[in-house]
Structures are given as structure tokens and as C-alpha cells.
Image (cartoon, rainbow, N blue to C red; front, side, top):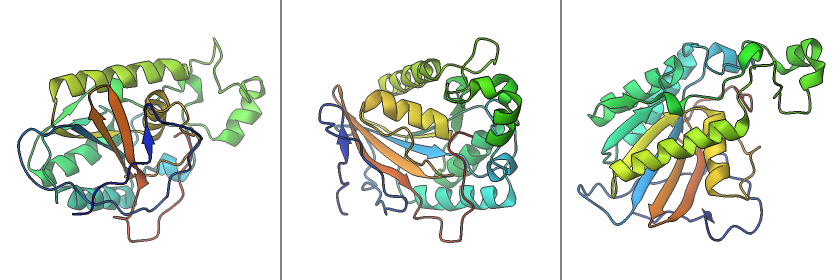
Length: 240
């Protein structure tokens, strides 16, 4: 099979990079057993009604739409083509359902970890950007972070994302892992690993983002790959 195309490295990031939205990605050979690197496949959950309505979900449990379930099944079929050693998931319903479909297709169990949750948006959860601007104009332009808003600081989410990744890679050295999480969480993690990563880059529903770890170096090989979604999609918000 064709090798992955390296697009960012932890020690070689020169300028912000805009990822392709539908770049095709080919699975690694299906050889079982330890390999020289650890592979992490990040998957965002399928679409929810609040995604469609552009509402901040945060820690709210919102189920997948029919389209979201179809997206989960599509990414599961694709990932089932390769060999995987473990599946981890956020414990929120939308991620958990997506992970369950993937794990079943791959013939393995999945484990939930609350550190993989989306950013908590406190009292802003359930609101659209327009509603936030109308009700809380003092939060606009400040990342919605305010001591009384209940919004989790971005850096705190990035801390728990990095901590969870470190624990998983220490536990599964030389393995291939699937991690099902959320758009904001994936962006925060990429921002930590690759300082010049553009945090505004899209992470679409059930998109695939592939990382390799060799020693203390991380390589970002594919980002926001949605080539498994052949039907028209509904655009998603940046942070929900």
C-alpha cells in the first residue's frame, strides 16, 4: 500500500497548514503484532441535532441524528479494513455510540475515558453563537471564558487531552489505537503537539486524523479525512 504522507512533525513546523477536507487515506498493512511506532487514529463523533443547529454541546448528552448514525457506520466500515489493538472513547453519548459501532466492526471492545470529553461550555451549552452574542455580549471576543460563565479554559482541556494521550501511548507502545472524541478536543490536542497547527482548521463529523509517535516525536500524517462519506453532508460548527 502507498505510504502515508507526512504533513507536520513536532520538530519541523514552519508555518500554519490548512488540511485537506477530503484527502483519501489508506490503511496501514494488516500485519498484527508490535511495530516500530505507535499509531493513533482520532475520530470525531457522528452528527447530532445540535451540530445541525450550530448549538454548543459541551458536556450535554445529545444523541446522533439518523445521518450521524450513517456516518458512524461509514467510518466503521472503513476502519474495519485494518488491524487495531484498542478503541478509546469519550464517555459522552455521541462519541460512545460512534465508538461502539466502530469497535463492533473491528471485532474489539472499547473503553471510555472522561478525559476525552469535549470542552465544557457551562451556561453557554445549548446556545448558538448568535444567542450567546445577544445574552452575553461581554464574552464575545474572549473565547467565552469568564469566571462566571462556567466555560472550561481551553488550556485545561488541552492539558487533559495531552495527559490522556500520554497514558494511552504508554500503555500501548507499538500498537494501533482508535480514539473517538470531539472537534474541540481534537483541535486542542493537535495544537499541543504541533505549535503551528491552525486551531480553526475543520474537524468534521466522523473525520479521521492520523498520528504516529516514534520516540518523543509526533507526526501528523492525515487530518480531517472524510473520504468515507460519499453522500452529501451537512456543514458542522467549529466548536460544538
